[in-house]
Image (tube, rainbow, N blue to C red; front, side):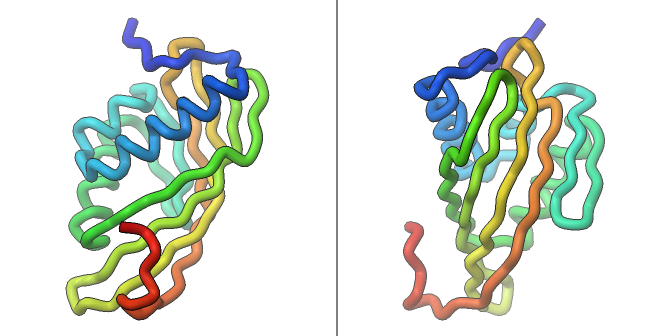
Length: 137
């Protein structure tokens, strides 16, 4: 059985580590690598899209990073207990036309006993910004 350390139940230290590992993985923009943090049957809500299973996650991430160019993400632990976490995030990206955006949101995460994310529910809003207003590099 595959394991993704750290494992639940989380402590403050391991919860912070889990968030940092997720941030680092997403900043690679590598769908193959990122999707391995999720269970085979993971369940997601991302904005208005419902995604089921690791293969759908991989396809979603591929589409995402083809559209969201020069993507850069920052995550912050908001709270945790046992095998669940609440995380706030912001990321910056630009589209093919060169318009920059800062996207803000919150995620609710649930992990299985092997440290793989079983559920991810994300609410996200996008704000247009000038390139000169970027703060994530």
